[in-house]
Amino acid sequence: MLSFSMALPVAAEVPQSKAQISLSFAPLVKEATPAVVNIYARRIVESRASPFANDPVFSEFFRNFAPSRPRVQNSLGSGVILSDDGYVVSNYHVVGQADEIRVVLNDRREFNAEVLLADASSDLAILKLDNASDMPHLALRDSDTVEVGELVLAIGNPFGVGQTVSSGIVSGLARSGTATGNERGYFIQTDAPINPGNSGGALIDVSGQLIGVNTSILSRSGGSNGIGFAIPAGLVKEFLSQARRGAEHFQRPWAGMTGQAVDADMADHFGLTRPEGIAITELHPASPFRDAGFRVGDVILAVGGQPVASPPEMIFRMTVAGLGNSVQVTRLRDGKTRDIEVQMTTAPEEPPRDPRVTGQRSPIPGLALVTVNPAVIAEAGLAPDTQGALITDPGSIGLRAGLRALDVIEAVNGAPVTTSAEALRALDDARGMLALSVQREGKLLSMRFRL
Image (cartoon, rainbow, N blue to C red; front, side, top):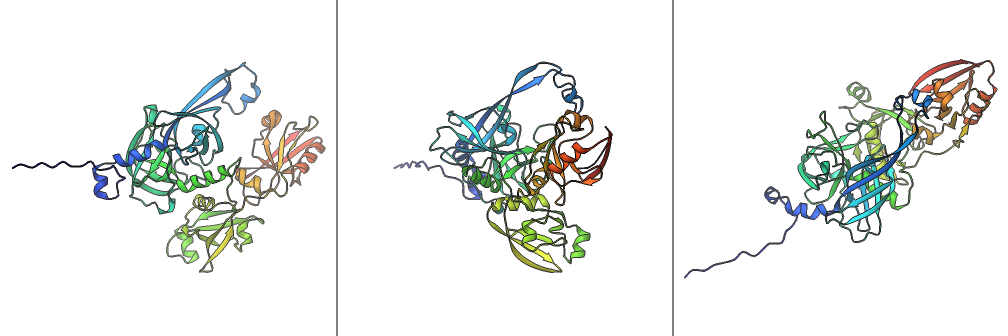
């Protein structure tokens, strides 16, 4: 007598073992993809048909050379839903300057969205979907637990073909500035194929948690060569936190210092067995590190228990620690290590930046200035010991005279200036000859003009 048995269907589950993963990523993809969205951003810009439009000098002279015409710029990218009430993360270069944003879910639902918080230097933006609730979303994983060699999936909308999943591994960690050339860059590297349109999409692990936001690739052809970069979830978490608190601009803790990575020669000098850490070369008087007892010549080995090997890595560790919190910093001095608590604060606006604009009677009318203070130093990337009046807009006359935005006027006719008000008065009092001492990108320039 023959007997038959029928296999019962097994409920789909996220793969938990290497054997399960080798069979299929399908259950993982089915769980994660509803939280990855397509983003269509639209921006209207004014353009002029001037042959000098892209020239840094002549564009000012021919600013009104041709009538302006509105032009629509469209961008396509991806995003990841982070909460059931519709908070979405994407890249700044996708949505940061958009006038109109449309978000399309995997199930074809569409939502209008607005940017709550965006930061060009981090290339991150947090959006809020209009009238959204019960949204599918991904959990954020602790970035510090990610290891090289882990299996990952990249999910996004490459070239606008529709939602696409690619697989790979984590190829590297702590890639500083490699992908964008930005000094604050800090990335997870992956060989999972990432292409145009994947920007803002999800990089997930085999448990379906978000470990990073895909942002860029390293390629000579424009296509994927297996070297892609994702912004770690730790930074995304801090962006989401600040967006929920209603921050208008993303704020980073201020170190108030400059430093350099310890190389092999320096390691021997500091008594280290191998190159590690950051040697402090300058400290601002108001630096929270100075307040905590650090001084020039100290070496910072770790922040928050995590080793640091470059200034961008240290800034990243401080940022994910969160403003208002204190973080444990490991210091090396005279061959001895010590853990010290440092408060994470923003750069102070002291003295006030006091914006000023020179009048028509000034030798350089229309010159916009602010007093250099710690906040200005942080925003402009200046050396901690910088003093003077920073140029925010040189105006047409100043531009022709050779001045640029972010130049710092340190002296007028030989007299040092430390505030925007002092610089304005000194310019107004100039007669016959005008001599300026200007700091530009770490170099001191001398400019002389006959009035």
